[in-house]
Length: 241
Length: 224
Image (cartoon, rainbow over the protein chains, first blue to last red):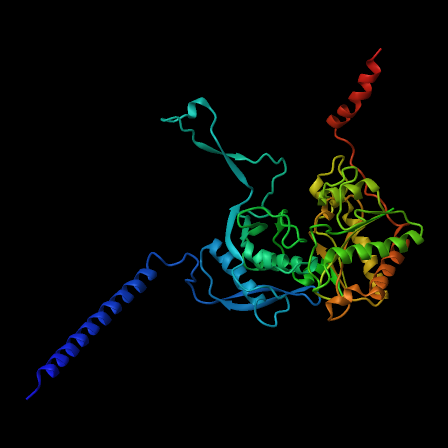
């Protein structure tokens, strides 16, 4: 004869087992839905969507002030802005590895990269009286910049890359003419090697212009994207021994 | 005339070279050492700062900007302008000239941000000769191009001289013998450079500028 309290314990255990089973099933279903949602509209824009490809990173060396090309297999996004950003992120990640010849702090360096077609064109509101629309709005019209000698593309389709750096990266960057110049030259060379349509590069920090990277290298000027490896620099007058 | 620009100063300490050494003190010490050697060789030397904080001349208390430093250099009409920096990365001496592309001649009114362009061939020659001088002195050297303000605004043969430690110890940058070797190599080379420097040719003034220049004297002549 089974006692009453034993029957109560038995049925309580049965109820608990069924409840846990239901919770597990619901949790699993929610997990599936979350993964499905990530694979659809919430996929990050710069997630790699292609197979790994061979890219060239221009890697700097503080010991002799040189920059040498190195090949890496990296999966990059297709969209050019995201591609440029991913290239720089991979480059900076290389420098954050232990034993790097150009040691930089780990962490995200680039907030965004914007590719702008050259020559630069600005926009202004149309001031002609006939341009006023209903409600008093005036349309915008493209205008050439006031600079009489604007930056012109060397090739049709040439672009200006505006690289917006994180202030956390810039504030932790080692200070010195050589170490700062090598970082910039490394970025310029890597962009030139992999995205040849980029002809000019400008730098921002948290969306604002900043005078220097870490007290030395000029961040206000527009840099030409060019081959910055040591062989090319030596041919232009630079040398080291 | 030689212009020495010991970079940083005051609240701008520059890079932290070691626990006890900051860049602004190293650049000033090297500048004083160089000034002594250059003066002994018959040069007149202008320094953009002679104490910790750089102040605008005739405006005591106003901190000196990078443009102010370039202005001092440009008014000196110098045979060479040396911007002195220091770093803990690398070894020996790092020598840089401007990254600007050389222009054939100096325009009548040079754009401030690219005024160095007309002087690039001279700066390139000075860098080449300075490189040879450092090699003769047995000093480790990296020579290249860099964009370091205010060198792009200078109208003189201009170089950035960045002093790095002589060995693995960052504090070796303060070694007086080491700094003296570097200063001797620079001063010795500038003696040879003095007879070689040639200002770039100047483009003629545009017609409108000529008219504007002539206007004041014309007006004076018209007065009774």
